[in-house]
Amino acid sequence: MTVRYPDSCLVQFAKAPLAGQVKTRLQPTLGKIGCLKLHRALVEHQFRIHQTALVANFELCCSEEHDFFQQLTESTSIPVYVQHGEGLGARMRNTFVDRLSKYSRVIIIGSDCPFIDASYISQAFDILKQGVPAVLGPATDGGYVLIGLNCVNGQLFDGVTWGSDQVMEQTRQRLKGLDWQWQELPFLSDIDRPEDLEKLLDFKKLKKFV
Image (cartoon, rainbow, N blue to C red; front, top):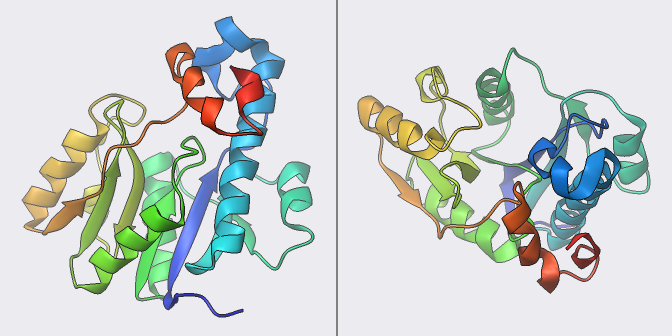
């Protein structure tokens, strides 16, 4: 199958579905098992979108080996591999270093934002193709749902307070420090807090969690 950007790669990051370790801020509302089910549903939702969209070469990069990921990919040709590095910043940096040795442009997305569609990804690759070093998809909670690069510098990920509402601003400051140009896509929402659940009403397979 031919993808729109054959020299580019889209990587979906996903945490292993372990009860009590995913969607923890939603536990008072959904309970541990409900959070586990929602996490699995969000990972699969994002995976299915990009598996069929054929925007770029697509890969699944998980926090650790788990049967869920093997079941998700077993009837596809999508590569699945394990992230490496201490902490999220190191894992993203290492993924960019690895994939940019093979591809001209690489985008990493998480699995917490069901609103990332093929159009959003295409916009990001179009920006990178124009020669802009970095593109970001800011999240409404102060983080980001997407980061794309056509070159990598480890300083971009050093000292960032991951999981906080400062991630996006700290990343902007690091980009300025590197004297890199970048562009930002429209804000999107992660599904992390009880008030975020209503946003799932537009998704047939996700609205059961509202």
